[in-house]
Length: 292
Image 1 (spheres, rainbow, N blue to C red):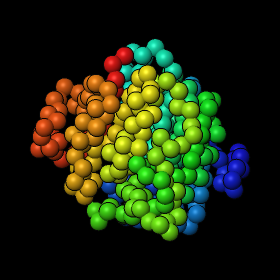
Image 2 (cartoon, rainbow, N blue to C red):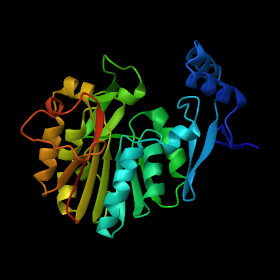
Image 3 (cartoon, rainbow, N blue to C red):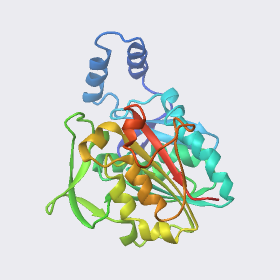
């Protein structure tokens, strides 16, 4: 049985065609990815599939644009989620999750469902299509949630989305200031949003992570505690020439912090050397957090 909301049906299980295509793809059958694109383009997958993450929450996945399976969802950014699950309880306090680059809300919902001390969500997503699904998903949450169709940076104004030369997917798009751009941009500090005493920033903004931090210095300085999780993508680092070590340095100038590579917590980070001269050219998540 399907429920209709925003003209998109919500179903409990993926269509049979979807399951067949994913099975073929898992076995690298030739033509299976093209077959998936065909089903999607013909609107045969224009459905939300409601997946249960755990007893605390569910997420609706628009499989036409995000062809995710339950297995994929349960393992999505697993290292980051497990890392944060160990960090947040040390503070013995509730946190506001500020999700910069929230996409459809999967990461936010996964964090909230696994970290029960997160009692408020403020999510930002500049892509209109992704934002509509984000807004839909925030309505499933049991905590106070705010979703904004905008980008965050260190300035207020307008921008447009552009894709890097190495990736045409929306996930890789970044903002470029543009006076006549159709995307609203603001700094965290300029927004009239109560973030509380304890702030958890998740930042995935394709190379603009440092700008987000610079636009949130006042909020972070006022916070009793903060935890910041940001993505380091070696290709975006090459594009922007903004090294992850400069982002860490900007944060620890606000308050002394510990910092770790989530996927390699035993690895050292020398802030005086370029990050990717020290570590493999991979996509990492880096967590920087103030002492509890």
